[in-house]
Image (cartoon, rainbow, N blue to C red; front, side, top):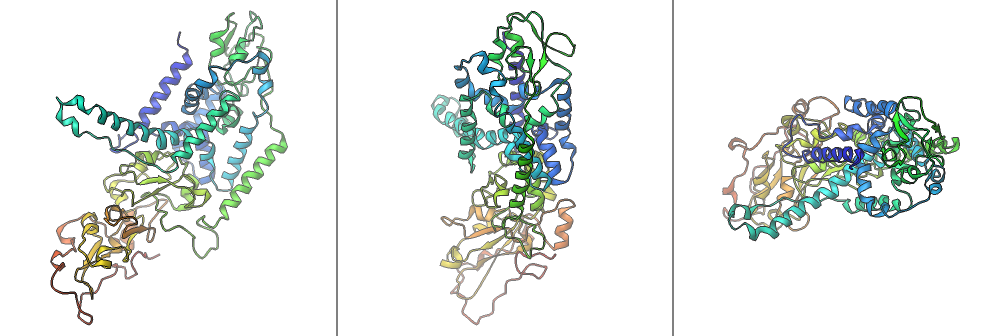
Length: 561
């Protein structure tokens, strides 16, 4: 007989997988692909505190916390994709474990239970100081990151390999011989695998070690489920066999079968199914001979230590040289290649809001969005950036903002997104085939969607050379992606001139800054092919048309403030 829990877990994981699959380009309008991320109360509450801003998107998580007052931690046992994934990974380990009643009881497994409450205090204390550490403990952020950066690319690779290996069988269908599944690559994926391998390995010590001892979301729900309305009851027919104690996945039952720690019970109903006397029920009626066992009770010293640790960690991160927005600072020490997605909030707000789930990276149509290590300091760990040398940002895609569960990337229309300037391209002349070797090359102008590259004659060059018209460049990165130079591109995008708004219109801001973003047409095409190989190079002293800077009169890439 199939357990009810297995049915609900399978349905929930399938729904998670379906929504995860549709978090892609083209986007299925009206489908809440980030629904499970919104269900995590730690994301909603922690982000609200760190960002000092509440969104209705967090209401499902708050509603879930309130439901635990009635049903206990049912989310952990039936819905959470992290818990289900860990159970699947731990099957080879847990299925062979045999324990005695005494060693499987709550009292014998209570040593590390308080850790998750300390982790919760650390995260909340850091959030009060304006630093988000939610991504370190949110189970939905962690598991989405696993599926986005590890499982999804492997599935795509396996699918493409399967098509290639079976192609001889399709001789009757010649069109299928050209079918390919585009793959994706991501940074930090090996680290994510190692992290989950470590969490899974802890099952050798205790089944569901993460859920029992480390999950701060579980701790948050446990605070509201110490005495739920619907709870475990043990009737008079119990013969004290201890089977329920041995089989409880979270060791929420005391040494006596009638004693239950409700804040640790995930309502899996396994004890109901295996009880030989049918003495166990879950109900709201005061019957049976159950009694409570005091749940995890971290000492005051431990909680104070957690709060101080969270505040101290936030202080360290906020005084790190790589963190933007230091009060009184003359400028920000920001890496030039820290190119955030179009529509990303200003950096301090972005770091306080982004939960590093990887949903935007998975959904990115071109694979340009990548997680980073320390480019933005420790606080920016795993946040998304564009990597133009790998891929560019296409003008007809705005899916990253649509799948972001916290609004760290704003949900912009295509017109607004096109005006969200992420940086400015610049020519590295020593790498450029035209500037350095006086060879013909038009690639950067040909691929630029906005005519932001202009070719002009200069002294001592037989061929016209490229310049970037800064007030036309959005920083999309097509020029850098397609540059034919081996290794580092001869034209690169950096954050000079980026525009990031917490609210308001990018179109209006672009108009204010004198930016002109238009797709190519004949009237804007500055390329003059006849300039190539037209006699000898221009001699020094001869008159040539000078390069015109941006319409705002400032050097390329600079914007008025």
